[in-house]
Image (cartoon, rainbow, N blue to C red; front, top):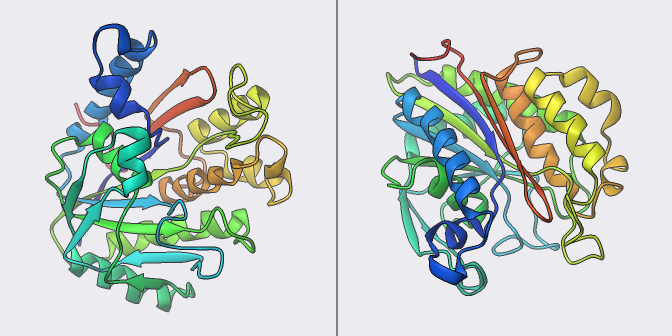
Length: 287
C-alpha cells in the first residue's frame, strides 16, 4: 500500500514568484524574509521524499464558473497545463506543464464514490495558481506527478465546513489504500482571513487578525472540534469576503488527523494578509 509521507497546508500567494525573483529597486522590502521562510518550509517536503503529490486547491473562476461548479473534482489526465493568461499578465507566473498520476486519480475517484462523495472528474483540467504556487514554493523543479483535487470555495451553494473535514479524512484513507509502493504527499492550499476587491483588501495585517490567530492555533494543534464549533458558512463572511478558502485548510486538518499537532508551523504577516505554513509527518518527523 502507498505511504502518506507528509500532509502539508499552505497559502498560495500569487505574488510570491514575482517578489522572490525580482531584484534591485523592484524587489519589495519583505521579499528576503518571505524567501527565507519559504525555503525553510520547502525542506519539510524535501525531507519526506515523496514520489507523488496530491494537490488540493480551488479554481479561481478560470475553468469552472458560477453556472457550472462541481463541489469536489479530481483531475484525471496524463498532463496538466498551467497557468492562465491573466495569471501570467497580473502575477508574472510562468507557463508550466505538470505530469499527472492517472492510476492514483482513478483510485481516488472510485474510492471517493464508494465512500459517499459524488466526485466529479475532468480529463481536460487546466490548473491555476492554487496548485502551481505551492509547486513553485515547495517543489520548484516541478518534477513529480500530481493529482489535482479541486474544491468549491467560491460559488454558492458551497459544502459545509464539516464536509471538507470529512473529505480530508477520506482522502487520507484512500491514498493509504492505493496498491502502490509510492510515497505520497498530500498538499492543500487555502488561506486565512482574506478580502478580495473589497475595502479591506489592502488594510494593515489582513482583514481580521483575531480570526487569523485562532485559525493558526486550530490548525497547529489539530483542533478540529474547536474549529468546527466556531466556523460556519455564515461566520466565514465576517473575516473577509473570500475567507471561505479557509475550508481547504480544514480539509487538510481532516487529512492530518483529529487532535494531531503539526510538526512544523510558521507564518508571515504581510501588509494585507497572513501567510501560514504547516507540515505533518504521519510516519514521524524525518531526521
